[in-house]
Amino acid sequence: MMLEYELKTHFGYNQFKMGQKEIVEALLNGKNVLAMLPTGTGKSLCYQLPAYLMEGVVVVVTPLLSLMQDQVEQMMSRGEKRVVAINSFLDRETRGRVFGRLHTYKFIYISPEMLMNEFVVTKLKKLVISLFVVDEAHCISQWGYDFRPDYLKLGDVRESLGSPQTIALTATADQEVRSDIVRTLKLDKWEEFVSSVDRPNIKMVVDYVYDTKEKLDRLLEWVSFLQGPGIIYFSSKKLAEEVAVILRDSGVPRAMAYHGGLDQESRILIQQQFIKGQLDVICATSAFGMGINKENVRFVIHFHMPLQLESYLQEIGRAGRDGENSISILLYSPHDEQLPYQLAEGELPTEYQISWLFRHFGDQLLYEWEEMEESIQQMGGFTETSWRLTRDFLRSLTNSMDLIIEKERFIEYVNTRKKHKRKKIVEILNWIQSKECKRKGVLSYFGEVSHGTVDDCCHVCGIVYDRYKTKCSDEVEFTPFQWKEYLRGLLTKSGTSYEK
DNA sequence: CGGCAGTATTCTACAATACTGCCGGTGCCGTAGT
Image (cartoon, rainbow, N blue to C red):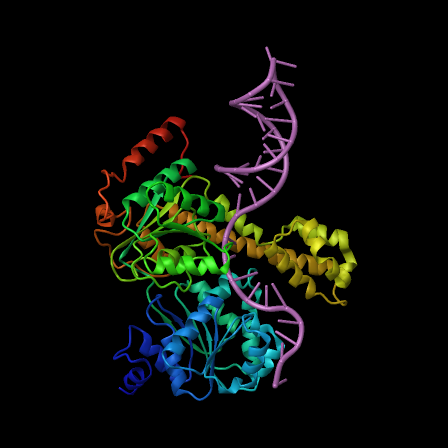
C-alpha cells in the first residue's frame, strides 16, 4: 500500500513489476541483497525507490561510462537533480565543484576504478551512505580476475566505507558467479532474489556447418531469410567490419559494424541509429550490448561462439524484449573452440613468460623494474591484459619475500585461472554439441529445470522457421535443413566427424 | 584452429603456389582535485 504510493509519487507507476517489491522491502528491512532480474524489468528502480525512503546517499558502481551517463540523464529528465557521475569525463573545474558539494547529492554513480582512488574514498567516507549498489555485478566474476582487476577490490572499498548496506544486481549469474559476488563484496548476511533466466519467446538454434566458407554462406542465407532487426556477434573486429560490407553489397544496405575499436562518436551514432530503427543489422563484437534497450530485436546470430554460456545467454537476451517471438542462431563449425581458447589464454601470462621474467630480471623485480615496464612487456610478448595481471603481481612484492616462492604462487594462480577459463569453454562446447533440447541445457546450467517444451523451442525440439521469416520482402523459397543433407554427404565421404 | 599478409619459390619472367609467422574480445584510468 504504502510502497505503491511512493512508487506513484516518485516514478509515476501504479504498480511494481515482477520481483521489484520484494527486493525493495528487503532493502527497507535492512538486508543486503543479491538480485538476479532479467534485463528490462526495472532493475534500477529496485535501489532508486528505497533511496528515497532512506537517510543518506546512494553510491552506484557501474561498469560502463555510457551506462552511467544514461542513468544520470534519465534521472535528470525525471526531475531528480541530486545526481552525479564521477568519472574521467569530469574536467578539473567540474570535479572541484562536485567534490565541494558532494554531500548535496542523493545518487553518486561511479566506476570501480575511481573507487580505487584514495582521495575519492576519503571524500565518500565523510558521507552517510545509505546504500551501496553494484550494477551488472557479474562483472566482478567475469572481469575482476584479469580484465578489470579493480572489480575484485570492491569488497575492500566497501569495507573501508564502513560496510554499508549493499545490493548487487545482475541479469545472468550461475550459482558459482553468485557466490563469487557475495564473497568478493564481503556480504555477511544477504538475501538472494533469483528469477528464471528462461525467455520462452527466444528460440535457440545451433547450426552446424562444415567450415568457415560454408558458415559465411549460411550467415547470408539466414540474414536474408530472417525478419530484422538483428544483431550478429563476432569475436573479431575485422570480420565484423568485413561482413558488414558484404551485407551492404548484397541486399542489406542498412548494416553497420560495431566494436570497441571505433571512436566514441561512431559508437554512439551507430547504437542510436540501430535503436531508432535506421539500421537493420549490427555486426558486433562483445562490446555491443550492455545497456542497450531495444524492444524489437528479432534475431541474434553468433558467427563465433562466446567464451561462456553466460555471455551467450546475455547476448541472445537482447532479442525479443517486447515479448514477441525471436530467434537466436549459433553457427558452429569444427574447431571453432580454438578461437575462444586463444582469447582466454591471451588474458593470462604463460608459464614460460613468467619463468623468463624471473630468469632475466631476478632481484630487479623487487625494485627498479617499473622504469623498464614497456620494454619488459614487449620483450616478453605479454598482451595488454596479461601484462597488467603480471604487473599487479610484481607490485605486490616486497623486499622480505622469497622470489622463488612468490613465482611459484603466481604460476599456480595463473594455472587455476586458466583451468577455470577452459572449463567455461568446455561447458559451452558441450552444450553446443549436445543432442538434448537447447533450452533445457542452458536452464540446467543455471540450476533450473525446464518447464516442459512448447512446439517452438529449439532446433532439437523443433522450430516453425516461417514464423521468423522476413515479412517485407518476397524471398525465394528457403529450406532450413537442406544443407544438413549436403553436410552429411560430405562427412560420410571424408570419414570425419564434426561432433567429436 | 583458420585466415591473412608478406615473402620465397618456381623448369626464364608472369603469375601461381608454398611457406612462415602472427593475430584473434571486453574498458576503466591517467593530472589534481576539499
